[in-house]
Image (cartoon, rainbow, N blue to C red; front, side, top):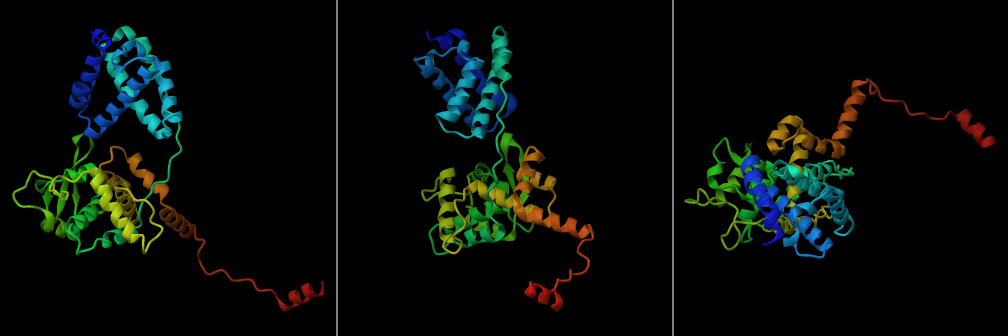
Length: 334
């Protein structure tokens, strides 16, 4: 009998994922995978630290000192960012809160873990494409290529809706309405639904790839007819970014999530209210949406210009100063 079975750690891990994350919280598969990876790394770290197998890790090994050592390992040895370190801590906190609800005998031990704070991280500037750059990437699709219709529909869909890759890959014909009021129903984090309108161009591109009699099957599929994967989407996008880079060499590396950022910034530049963009993108908090304002220099310049005009400092054109002939003569005589 392993110590996992003896002290209940295995059972608590199982109930954490099945009863709590999936049942009580309704967490998305993305969140579940992230928490699974964090706990797996933590248990492996504890095992190596104690020169034993992961099966021998017990509840008594989960204490504040071990968690702090693990977080330091994440940064110093695995070379992860502070943001990743904080994400690992959030996952561990959630698990420890679950332990606390079921194991009050170690409440003090768990309480010290919950008191560990996240580390302050420098906010990175968000990468996004300006509208003309996004159009260049979409226009790079060769109409003569085998998967041209699928690729163009995919790129248009990502830019039009700002959908997460997981949301786009889950779209099936039953979630689409491609008539005059074209729209799509997306399922976001935590199973939350939202509707996004579609451009006529996007709707027309989607009509060409939607298969009849496949109401519940994903519309974006690979060469073998299987559902397209996240790596597949990244490959498709990078291919056309490479082509567009021939005329726009400053594009750099563009990931599928950059298309989501690009949609958000384009909406902001068009004057759409932040709260509307929050609902459009499916953000849980408006603070997440506000990041795009901080990163967009063009919008900041526009705000500054509006402020300058409002202050009444642009009336009349300023007269350029010209030196008088007497002044020039004086300077030449010095």
